[in-house]
Length: 310
Figure 1 (cartoon, rainbow, N blue to C red):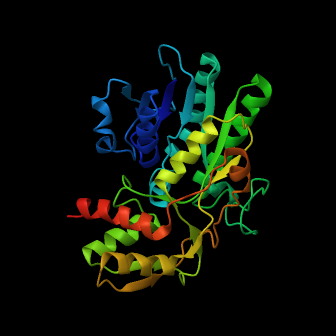
Figure 2 (figure 1 turned 180 degrees about the vertical axis):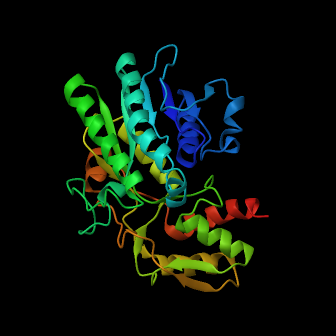
């Protein structure tokens, strides 16, 4: 297959592009580097099966030649990023999705939207299953990301129903691993960077809020299985093992051997109190479930962060 990946220089886009190439596919990568990093794809640029274009996908999108799939992964994806770039976040979720869908329609290609567990907002049920409509504040500071992804899902399903397009609606839960930025702002890179630099490890609120962390190789495997399936409805991909953020901070401190103190700061507005995927559909439809346990994944990620922390 020849596959377009938007956001190809980002954390997930770079891992996904590498995986697709390893499977023997050709990849066209697009990124405007608003949050992506050329270092993430440095090795891929030498691969003849990988084409890269620096471009903003909210503009008119044209790719010469055939495409078998369009995977739309372009978007700021951490609170720090979408608070810094609120309008680009909304634009890539709305205009970028529209342009990518139009290209997929023209090429008669499968379209995949990288959606998120954030469509569930600060959920009133735990775990979250795909039929749950969510509890989102549309005008809060996180709304620019939450609503961009909810609109992207609605637009994707409209194209599926109206144009009979094959679509893949991927709801990604918290994922971590190499290629995350040190200043990403999410819990794992925050804790690791602080621990390795000997700075205080900042936990927001009382630290009892939970996350479910999926190692990146497991997530990419799930994404590929969804792409190759015939499933057009939403599918959660994530690790259902739930851990409190305080427990996570303590685990990172222990595994890095850091002497950092854990300090507490006020909880940001609309920060989710719980986050855990119900992966029943992924197990049934894709025969997928995560394999990498938290300790193993954290050790691999810490090794990467050690190589980057100055």
